[in-house]
Length: 151
Image (cartoon, rainbow, N blue to C red; front, side, top):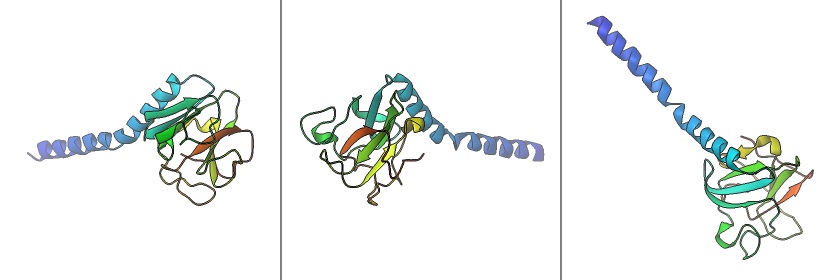
């Protein structure tokens, strides 16, 4: 009887251990799959975490995600919760919590080497404002990144 109880306990603990990392693995797999599906040269922003519910995709820049022109429009501003940078040139995507072509205010960057951010939680612009659901514009840059997003 003790052997059966010990076996059941061991099996139960092993099953639980396999279930715990599954959430992180699924999130990583979702963004990995999304990254592979994006054509080289593009930046993509998603409304949801884990690269779900695409807001927009572009090879270009957009100085105001809330206006009616450019790759991001209207309701896209202040909604991004995950990102992909599949730029082919090695440039970073500089993200801003403000709008306009003066590119002033708080910013942060997603490097090409980072590939994606499955969640923007606990990430901050240089101004100290949280990045999640606060991106209003972006551009491609070689340098000038005060802060980089990290996974």
